[in-house]
Amino acid sequence: MNTHETHPSESPSSGETEEALTGIGLVWAQTGSGVIGKAGTMPWHIPEDLKHFSTLTTGHPVIMGRKTWESFPAKYRPLPGRTNIVVTRQQGWADSPEASGAVVVSSLDAALLESQFAPGGQNVWIIGGGEIYRQSMDIANVAVVTVIDTDIDGDTFAPEFGEAWNLEATQPAEGWLTSKTGTNYRIATWRRTED
Image (cartoon, rainbow, N blue to C red):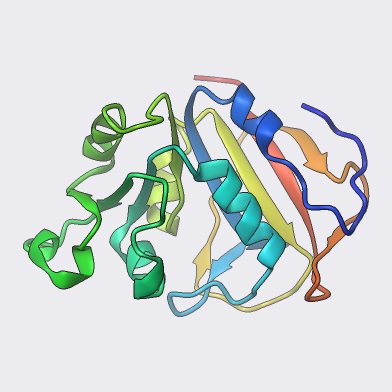
């Protein structure tokens, strides 16, 4: 993984992360205090991070919980260029208009099985929300986390990285990238080293 400093106006490339990934990846954005959501939304807007997310996940299946799926505006569902697998325990939701375009399953295990048969299924990205992330921490091998230099209250938090995880790299290696919105952020790549 290249850890060179990135100029603040440059958008970091995800190609190196993607090439190194074979298996299950987690991707999310969080504040320094671990907030990933508030009232079903992300309480920030960083276009460069959205582009990074799209580049990283396009061509691979994405797994998410129903609330994450429903947090996307209808015009962005399903996320293009990806098999969208939604996990829900809500009976009958698969037949609802909200589920249009999603592969609906009842468990994370079923989602992972389904992802193996999807285009690009050698790599699968888990994209939220909080409960799905927590269930995935012991099976994922990489996490790509955008850390946002802001202090925002929220009601959904990222899982904590335990001893099995090592910080592999940050982009930039020191300091922050600056979004065109003026928000500072950096992208951290974590790798799980223990089974």
